[in-house]
Length: 329
Image (cartoon, rainbow, N blue to C red; front, top):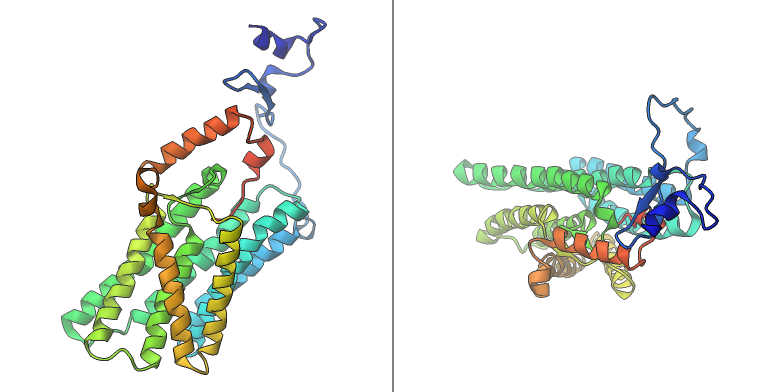
């Protein structure tokens, strides 16, 4: 009762000037100030000029979006432009990994950064890989029933990457960014896997390694693997968030893959080697929850919610950290 009374009355017995509606009691009795929710109609705010809202982190987010748009256009064009689309998606991953640290370092003048980031991620990591996959495999097959089945699988894989990826981003933007790890496969990891496996198919064909039954098997296996990855994005499975040395390793691996794709213009075997390395790395991360035992698979959301409540009670998570969670989706 003394803690509840302390909300209304100070130590000298005088009433506080804070409204009880502005306060929130934790389970341990500690108080936290929240944003006041006004009742009744609110006066519309005058929109601020766009130039006054753009922060350094937003510039990186927009660069991510531009990479996604460029990847869509180049993948539709096909031919040698397909290689440029692969590189642009990887550059988008680099920009997406940098905007979070830059936002924490320089700050931001607005609070819709996570929504802006989700729009850019949906373009680069969901829609662009779907276009890339569809335009790469839509003409595969030797005609007849085989081509029809392969085309249906390609369409299902492309739609799964785009739709399930957008659903995952929507869930992440509402609450998922508060958790210490990811629920479901992150969309940048999905895009990295799509680039690696599609590039592996592309450069294997250019190196003359896809002949006969190998081409048929690859035209089925690549869309099938990416469909499984798309389902992992919405699965109730725990994926570790990249931090510290693992984040540095991921950045180096992305740079190596970009360099190999560029060098692939001169030697298909170099591009093939880089995509093979990326395919092994992305497949290892896709299956990583299996190595964590029961804590990594099924029911991860409920377990992480319990961990988050324990952190709040222990005072390890402040309100600023909760509201300005890292937006690496």
